[in-house]
Image 1 (cartoon, one colour):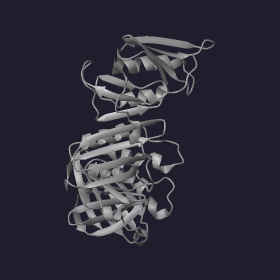
Image 2 (cartoon, rainbow, N blue to C red):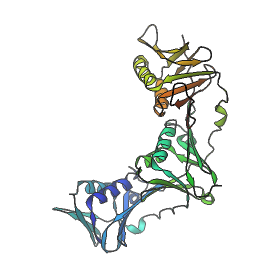
Image 3 (cartoon, rainbow, N blue to C red):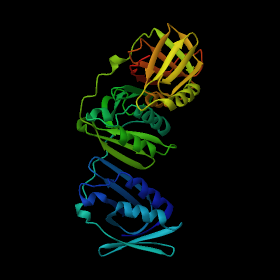
Length: 374
């Protein structure tokens, strides 16, 4: 291998590809990054059997070649190289990387030991990266963080023609995001379960000026690919049955309350200062206001009242303040509509643009109230 390449493009590609490398790889070769030079391109690949990352950049290739080197070390070196053109050249069992007055010599890893990367499945549809990233982030709010049931660490992706619905739940709350996209086949339907942390990591690294293309093969239904701006990621799908959560949504809620979202978040933040860990914040809805309170008579207490447009009978509900703020934080609209049945049933949160307008169902957040003692 012998080539010249721009140092900034090289550092960016190495950093992106090596971000998935495990801190404790199952085998030493999985700590490596594979570089392939040919046809005026330098390709980068990483793989840990569960997920893979592939990227390529332009390069002036004098000699084709394929090598594997320690990924994290190469990332550190690439980040420290001076701006401008750098050179890579292999000799015997080493690769020399030089730029400006800097020169590094790295030991090559056995390329023959590197596992074969999974094949990228055919595209099933695409959407702009900003919409995709926002949907993933909103849904990831309710992904279980510590849970023995692996399915609760996943995001269910339901594809039906031009509509995509993402759902997650940790048993205490549920998040659902819907968006439209451009399918390759208008009749395509499928339901996938992808690890929430993996898809969120992919969404964080997207180029928002380009579309996201999802790839999936129903006949080999174990892999999802995400392509964006020349970068390709794959992830193993979770094999398991996602909980039947559709029944948790109620067709008719007898109690509705509309509140300014930023005012509510600020009030929760202040009142929660006196709440012990995992202690609830109480919300008392009466007339056209809601009083938030936390703490107990023999300890610190806090109360705050803000405006709320109430439709229905007075009600008192209590929530985990962290879960409450995370759900509200995923709503983009300036107002939030809380839809309630009683103090024990899950409450639905939706955003809306106007105080007297209709709620949006593009994002639906369900939160189970906590028991409280007056």
